[in-house]
Image 1 (cartoon, rainbow, N blue to C red):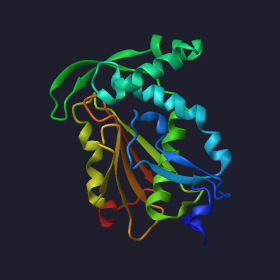
Image 2: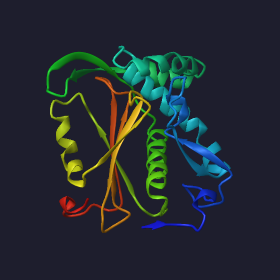
Image 3: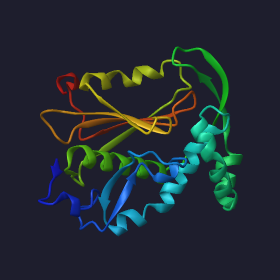
Length: 232
């Protein structure tokens, strides 16, 4: 379910408390200046906005390394140096992200072997937390209602190192998704759809740093439906 307000612009998109600032969805630090002119912002209270700063930096650092280490994404490569500088300042994070990185096999969408890439361990707390905040923000942005705090958000990380990775996205086409690009779409783009009979049930395909090293996350809100093809 979702909740609404008489004046949505004054209500935090995440918690429903009075909004005193705006939050960028996804984090603005992902983008290389000059920034796109269609960045998404949502109303936010100071607690939800300021409390996410550390998570946002961790998220930016992880994606930049995973997508930009081998030049697979020009946009990620541009973010890579700021990310590495931030990581070098934190010895714990340096050991976790760099020393524990491991090689992985890479494949094209058609299953052609592309050689080795790198897999970096992600923060098991911050990473999902940022992604769920992005989903909540996008939900508010498109539907102008706040997602109920009890609505579950399920995240599925698409592993492009597997030859059959596209099969995980097959159900998404049943919702007749809308495609949105932020700027040229090289840093962030997404597809979304929502059920016509249940406003809590929606799908979001988040694509970060388009290219062979792109990071893809499939998210859905609400409970699973037995017949997903019946929604659009």
